[in-house]
Image (cartoon, rainbow, N blue to C red; front, side, top):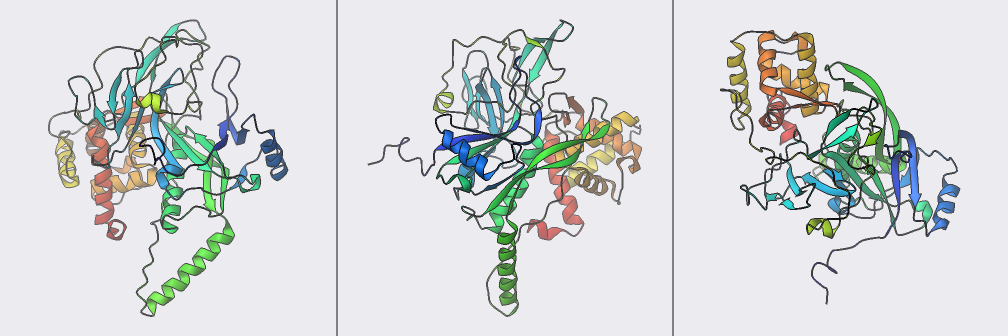
Length: 462
């Protein structure tokens, strides 16, 4: 008989290695630089795996790997969460929660970074005044703060935020093992790019992607990243990409073509294709980078970089904590406020798109205009919310009631009202502008979708 919680967890394969994007940490424990190829590490007890891999991939800097997925369960195969760590111990993980707002992220686990006390679990606060209420995750709020010494010997405070951590279990066929290698990334670009590709692959295979021959690659991509003034510059990043082998894709397309011909002939066979997505331009920091490259961590010299993180285990979810680990000195105070800010009549609780549009136009009657830097900050904030400049212009055109080619083409007073509504704040840890007004994250997204519908793209939402 199975044991509840122990032997009834479903199918699993052993993990035999890890695929990383960055170089090993330096002697000072600083994050390793982002590489342009895969760094594959295997179980030290299996030197034969290294030999097999090198025979299949003789290039010491491989950028392309043949892989397959071992599971048809999407959530078992792919995990993408917002996470934060302290001395290798997970202190926060956030994502969507079944039964709660699917457009909002909640804390799946949140600990006091100093004491290890469990503050939230499975989407709800479990202690304090908010006990029993949904534990809404606010990406504008740091999980904790620590102090470091800069190059000039000055003590500085560093706020630690959650980062999107991607983990994908893959099998490398050339190894001849029914075991997986774990692909890890802490890049927001990878999280967004891979999620689009994986969802499309999931849809096109109708959830039966186990065994489909795939190619995992690193590809150079020019992305726009804002500086502290909101000015954008292109930076090359070697992103992760997963796609089916051309031979499989060709066979799949031929099958779809045959199915469509049968449908045209009166056969009731249903064929559905995922809606295509354009390549996004988003704002993020370099992979595994910490601002100002602090030379000496005062509170914890073994502070782990993002991406070099420990796996979550049952002890974390049970609230246990390593009391012997060196202490940091996180800021103390109230829990982050999960309620959206209010500012007169344009930042009430979540509103319908038309209400938002009406309120912003009413606020624009007060007049005013932004300086060029504020315009750039507003544009960068919208790019972050909507995952790209193309979507930003779709939203602005809907708001303005006419087609726009640039944010600067918008009515200055309306653009100022939008800036005052968003309240863009720069996050140096991630190199992005996010809205201090938490309600904007949902309202702008819904308004963008409404704009697409109004523009004759209703079929995307049917």
